[in-house]
Image 1 (cartoon, one colour):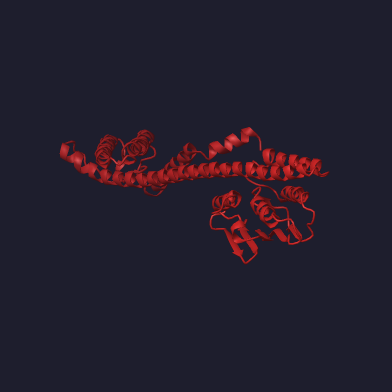
Image 2 (cartoon, helix red, strand yellow):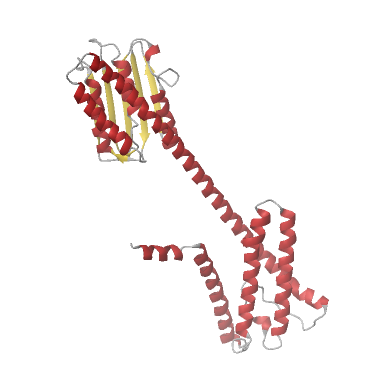
Length: 370
């Protein structure tokens, strides 16, 4: 779709266009009614040269009434809760428009049968031939009641439109706040990951391990992903899978015995998912499950997506409950951030469960992606 067509479609859906549609529809209904009445009852209205000016003036008066109310009085007074001033000026407006229309009807009555003309927004009613103040007020009463009704209807429409706008503004503010908080949390993830990984590289360097250069290359590829590819709302599962395995391989470089560490990453299709939800859980596994390098190293990590349900489960041994990184312990910034991110991204659509036995820690996260 080219830009010109998009502009045209946008213009056709604009507020101005909707108002034009409304008035065109009402004008069509009025003219069609008058034509049908003329065909059946022969009032002699349509043939009069005063008919078209009468319809045009009546329509303009109705438009002035409604748009002055909705574009001037309601925003200036109702939105600021100045109800007294609103009713004062709205009453004056309705009165002036009604009296003006009544005088116009009286004048047009000298040229054609105005008592049977249908007009936009105005009730069709007989008028007297008198021009005294009492006659004008009596004739105005009917139009005054009809105009009050129209003002009430359009004021309600203004209230609904204003409420919708306020909700949109509030929603945009919430989205911006959520986006700001998410960006802040993600900005904390990267330094936290880098801090842990540099500690691992430091250990390899102290031992002058042969796999230290390979570890640096893997760290470089992961940092490239963190800096340039993860700053989006969602990423491909397949890309996320590559980074998960790269991170696992980087962590395993410092372990001499990893036979009892199991990893399972799978999905029934290529989903679009928020980046790095897995990182705090996997960090926690390696930080606490492998703290003591011995034959007791044991842990499992599962990252599974099936039927729009993401499940992350991690289990590891640990030496004492105080060593488990939770939201309330020093070093638990990763899991704390994960909880906050999930509250913002999937409110009411995720569960986090933690269980601890004498030496086993398990965290399970379920997220509905639908």
